[in-house]
Every structure is written in structure tokens, then in C-alpha cells.
Image 1: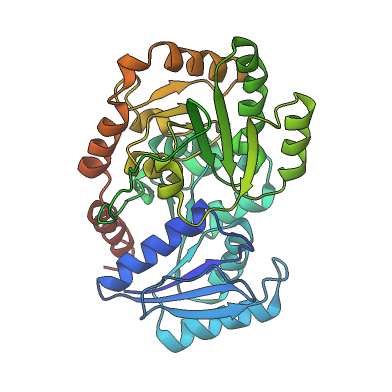
Image 2: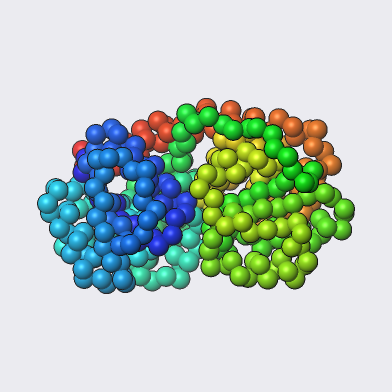
Length: 357
């Protein structure tokens, strides 16, 4: 199989991590993989040596030069499948498909209610996409609830492929000296759908209980200033900090007592698996496919994406900690059993081959 992936992202995030993993696994199995990435970005490292990386400007959704680069790759390498991963990529891919005999598969990693209002994406999905990959059954069911998708897609053309995770890396669970009894950490892009404002709002109530805690949130994004302002508004500077990007999230989480994932919308976040990889207890909101993966009270705690609910669940965890002492280990065990890299790769290969066999 010959595949070209399109990714116009300026920043590194969960979507890019998934794409790197998927490309590496496919390349390792002998498939020819090319990546058309945005010029002058530095985050595409640790790729399989056989992957061909080509830069393109991605100036806009009509970029003639970008389309020319993609068409040249398709023609010269006899590409079978074009995989698009961002909105700009979907639009560019649709234009390419108009003039090339190629399968166009898009990947959605997060809930997209905007699809109901975005005429361009609705048209593309209805007319210029052959398949859709999602990472949660909740997303597949959401998509099939839209008439414009349900009327144009067989349900088997929308594939739910859970993210896979390599568990070969040793887990660092060394104790470190802390200046607080409860260190809470979270990580992700600082965007509205990640819900960090909900977490910070909940902390204003935690303060009143006299709990000795600190919260550290790793990541960058458009809501950075807004979140800092919220921390200042509630006078939480002494206990809540935005700590910037972290290259090794598993190690970052392994030094915490608790990981919180406060998302408003999700597929299944990479940070959940990274928390399980570090054997940390997790509180996560009931967003996207999280409830498909976490067994509440067994390998994690689930609450609604609401500040009051996050607060009450955090208080429950603190007051009943002895009942939850094993949930981090149980999360790790579920990760090993159900979300292996081999499982993801097999499902991805089978799905993509269904278009060309």
C-alpha cells in the first residue's frame, strides 16, 4: 500500500501524535508512506527512516503550490490512499480527489458539532471522502446521527480505531520530594474544548476546604492568557501553574499523585493512556469516548464536564483515597490488554486495504 498523509498543523498535538504513530506502524510493516507537512515546522521527528517528508506552504485552503506538491507525490509514487487529518487538509484533499483517481480518507479525533453548520465540510464529506477514521464509538455514532453523513456513508466506511500505545518504555515511578501532599497534573493543548477553565474554576472551591494541593497544567495554545487571567482572578497563583510544553508526558505524569482530564469534547485523549502508562489515578470528564474506556471507580473516575462536578469528584477522591489506591495500576493493566500498538495497526491496515483490495 502506498499512502500520502496531509498535515497542515503549525503545532504539535494529539492529532499529530496519532499520525506519527500510525505512519511509523505502517512503514514498519513495509508500506510506502509520504507525509506532506507544513514548511518550517520542527515537530516531525522520531519518524521511521523510510517515511518520505515533503514540505508545502499550506498558506490557505486553495494553495496552488500545496496542491501541486501533493499531486506530484501522488503521480510519482503511484499513491493509493490520501489521508487527511486537519480541516485545511480535508479541503485540499477534496480538491485533489476531484482530479486524481485516489481514495480519500479523513481522520477525526474529536467531536465535531460544527459539522452541522460548516457547509464546506458537509459538502466534502458527502462528495469527496471515501472513508472516515474516528477513535471512539461515540464519535462514530455522532457522525451517523447527521443526515448528510448517514445518507452518503455505509456505517462500515466509518471505522472506530482506538489509539494504540507502546508499553515497551520503562515506567519511571520514582518518588520525588514534593512541597504539597497532593500534586495534580494535566496536559494538552490550551484550547476551549480541553476544558482547563473548568478545572481552574473548580479549584476556587477546593481552596475553601483547606486541602494541601498544587495543580500543574502542561501545554501551549490560544487560551494561555485567558487561563492565566482566570488563575489571577481567583488568587490561585500559589497552587495552580501553567508550566508550558513537556516533551515527556509519561514522566511528567509519573511524578504526580493524580491526573485530571477536564475536556468538554474529546475522542479518546492520548493523555488518558499516558496517565495509565505512568500508573497514575485519573479523573476524566464524560466527553467523547472516555466512558467507553474508563470503568468508573475501577480504573478511573468519571464526572460530567462541569466545574462543580470536577470539584465534587476531586473531593470524593481525596476523602476516599484508600478506596481508589489501585485504580492507577488497573488502568495500566487495561492499557496493556486492550490498547496495544499491534491491535491498532492491524485494524488500521485492514480498514485501509478494504478500499484497494
